[in-house]
Length: 523
Image (cartoon, rainbow, N blue to C red):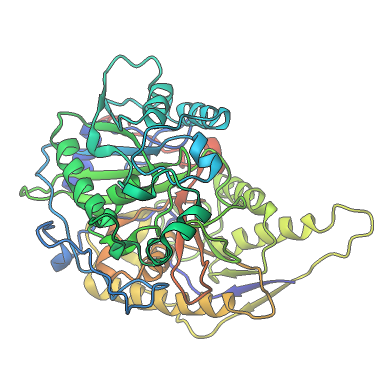
């Protein structure tokens, strides 16, 4: 039985952005490309961390790399306050990160590290071609690539006939794993025992041959950013590896080594980071626009950070609504939103969803019902099927009366702290409700789908990552997108984020069609 719970809501349009008007103008003038979706241009709204006193000058002089062995290795440390520092920018910059395609050592299950003995498999070549098609309409100024063969070949395929050069940078190589490199998993266990278990369970403190590989990687990633950001370019493609791309995402956002293996990078997965200059100089605003948009389905079977997960939460942003510039509090989806919700329902068809958690607002409820109908149909393809019925109920532990009038149209100069705090607190309560639903012991393979407004889903994501409310400005979600979180250690362990703002399933419907003004430059 699919249960649709109504838990949370907002009154606004499904693409939410906190930004400064100066940031908007900078991004428009930069002409930044869209990464990870075909046949449309980027929505210029971005979601930046610009909340009054929460603006932070990032400082790499005190890296957040300590995670004591006594800490529960399933959980992140206390809420993140660590930061990183980058050179000031004169214009906005978009950086698209791509992991290489499947390699021969990936297929064999060998630990590659920074060795250079493996090459792309036939599947890896196909994945690289899919990523090329995903990015074919994007106008990149430059490509940075790891010099290792598997990444360099992936970069060559994606770069195609573009005339600009590919710059190889040795600092973009994969994590250095020293004596572990070349070993199969069982060989590592047999030969190194406790050290290998520490690599699996407590990677930030893992030590081998006198080195701390993850800590070294974080330092190297910070160095890479300084080279990438000072380059005279507005749009950058970076093709590298799993661990180093994780480190690049984390260090850009000011997250420490405890986030290693939390932000998944699949073969040829695409992640997008936006950097926007501050009006008064200083370290730029940073937004993770999407994480790990993969050539294959983000909900397909497979491991999360090398481990199987039987518990999963899928955050779904409801489709586009009729009130793009309206004062209406609660409106139905428009035709575009209806298509988006159906596309999302089709994407989730291969999952046996146990429960659907929905905001009581009209658009999220419509999206949840579309998903439920498809889930019911999935059980009724045979002649002797017994249909599942949807039971709708509403949880009473959340107030529906968030005063979000300042969020109308998704364009916001600045959230008032009181409003942000209210949204943050409500999303925290909602997150606990999701974990309670996920912990249902009668469902060993439990998948929970939560449908709501992007700002609520961003709050859920930041609570999952054990971040503070200040980090809500570091993420962006689009209408109809999904975010997938696995729990290999159970519902109260560390969540592994498989993807953020995944929208490839929407195709041409991923960004609402808007009428540009005469003064706007198209992306």
